[in-house]
Image (cartoon, rainbow, N blue to C red; front, top):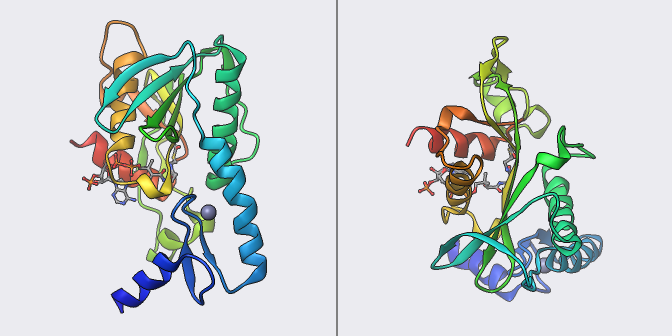
Length: 223
Ligand code: ACO
Ligand code: ZN
């Protein structure tokens, strides 16, 4: 069974069943012309969006064996702002967010994880906040956990807790997940958000987390 799946994935093109594109990560049915067309459209837009050509002036805030983290601030040159907007559009698309306007656009800090092969494979958008509401419990019933419609129905406390930094978006390219990229983005955020101090995990808050986001945040904040 496993080898069969592998064959389909490796062949990548005309096949029945589900295919994962090795470059853009989209899962689609190659035998379905409509699906295939949708993939072609997504493929080009996505790869163009995450392409990182390198900038004359870039603020590298962390370096790793497999890439680096670049910080973009609101007054940066327009080529940097444009890249952030392009990436954010891809991320919002994937998360199903529509036109979420940041509360303080001039205080937003965006961290891009740029891979060695010059692609933006991770993105974290943070803004200053004063308070946050703790997530209280899992949504009721096992069916709502798997259901996409209910995936933001976590219950929150009515009592605000003081916080410093809100993570409005965190995203890692599908094909690069579980390589600690999100963890390194948050570590770097904690180090860079306020000059001269390393934020505690209870000073950062994840806004409106998805199931993936919640699993990550829970794990991150407990270790
Ligand atoms: N399921 C279970 N545990 C997870 C998952 C998951 N999907 N993702 C992360 N974790 C836990 C694991 O314990 C992991 O450590 P391990 O791999 O050693 O077990 C630990 O968190 C660290 O994970 P990272 O490798 O640093 O996380 P990754 O780089 O894969 O990125 C992210 C996590 C950003 C949530 C990614 O899955 C993603 O982009 N998902 C789609 C977009 C999304 O839903 N983003 C969150 C939106 S909420 C918001 O923006 C505020
Ligand atoms: Zn593709």
